[in-house]
Length: 434
Image (tube, rainbow, N blue to C red; front, side, top):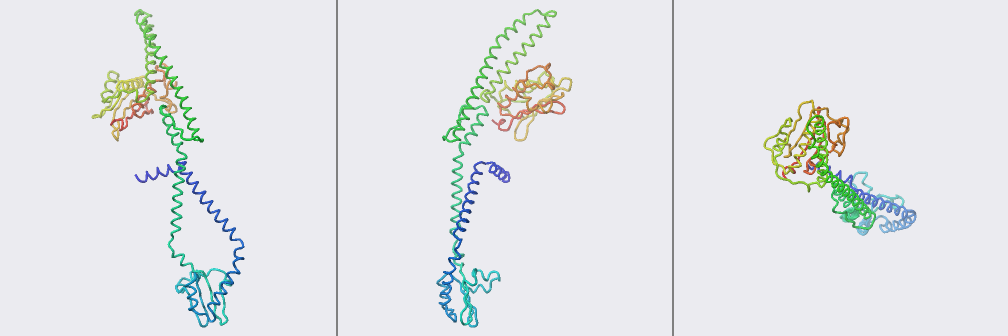
């Protein structure tokens, strides 16, 4: 679990614009600081050695004269106590080192405090002694590293401030993303808040204008389709009444039956159009009630010739019974049409891990081309090679089934059963327990 969390966190950071901007800020800050320090050191270091060498030489001469000849250990010790320097005396009479630890140190550590020009820091006395001076850095090493921790704390605070600033600067992007997700779900009631007047604020306003135009076009299309569908019902009903009054004998009876079938197909088309537009509103169009899906499947498939496999002890689901009957009838009719000549279609209702329930309807016909599966549930889509027009329908059946499943919060999947074609509707655990 922890590994997955760390992996998701790394994934988010890797694709996070805010994290990349903060990282860019830190890299630029470090590069600027390093460049400034290196440049200043180079600028101030040019000629410094030549300018300081006479001063250092004079100062070392004074220190050697103060120690005396022959060298006085007491004066040398007093000097090292007063100044941050080290003194080492070697000669025929006096051999003394201000840092006794140096004798026991490794060879490469013995001259740690004696770095520099030997001619600049070493003096020879008249009696044959050699006095070497050095800078004692031990006090600075032993001093608590307060400044290092303070610098680190300041860097962390600056990083936190930079992250907060970048987060605030890019907050409109979060609003735009959330708004785009709402618009994609068809929720146009809440616009994207325009918090600033910069480029991101202008982008949010442009997205709001685009969403408003799309909403108006969708509403206009929906209103037109509903109006046409409603207006078609009355003439269809009158035409059906007139067809029923035709004679029932001879050739006229055949024409009467054909006309009634066409009128029924048109009425079915109008019903599907109206239902698809109502379901375009999502969950608001549903009238849910606790439903035994297994019993509903048995009711719809009775006397159809299809086989059923229904698990026992299925929990009730919050379903719209009218819409679910429409979904089952469309799927069963589709399986009967396209599985003709093969074994009877199979309808299964089984429980899945996590308290989910799966409804599958499968025929054993020729199936469909895998290339057209992604478009098969789109409105008015008919792959001629797999679904002959003689079988009936205008390409709204599977589209309507997908809308009904999605309105119930279920997953809708199409696949080839090898042989045959299968439609799966999976009600997730939250749907089952709703």
